[in-house]
Length: 222
Image (cartoon, rainbow, N blue to C red; front, top):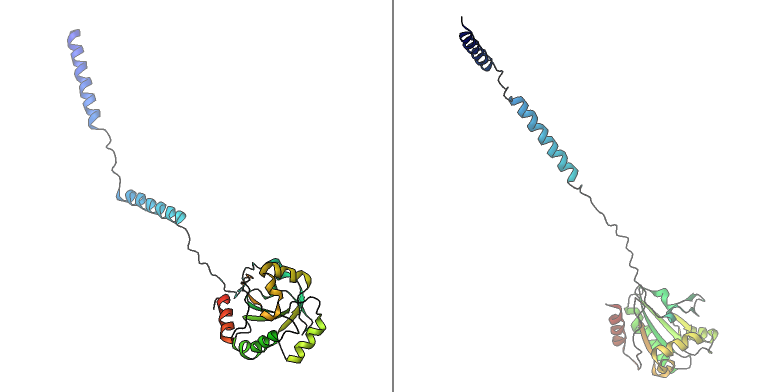
């Protein structure tokens, strides 16, 4: 056999070997349903975990009603001046009545107009209002009159609400707030302190029971 034929024979043998190797190649395995199910389950679990992590928990807030009706107090400085109730001997300030409507009647022991107004309060006004919401204070506007004289006046006339003598500091503050008329008892000066401490204007002149009650209701918000 010549050299040229030998080369051709070797090339043919090599070609046959390569063809045999290509036919015997191992096929790529298909993904089974079990693997697909496993992948799906894993994805579902992961999504559930993400939702649980991002979704906020529901919270229930309960507001407890305490019944607290405290009103912010805006009364002027003179509402904090200490006075003495001559009937009981106990001290108080107008600010102590925060949350209530206070009817203040400026008076003097010798003033007949004042006494008539106080009788109207006693007999026809006070019985018609809620004592838990409205306070009446008769304020002797003469600082030198003295507690003892006012105490005797209260007992003599059978008045049963708060009576006090305005000291000099309070008298000056009231004159500054309302003008000189507040210190003139015969014109029956009176004013209202609202539940939040805000004082009304000064009113003068005799009023009927209906007018007084209407005035109280106006400033109490009733």
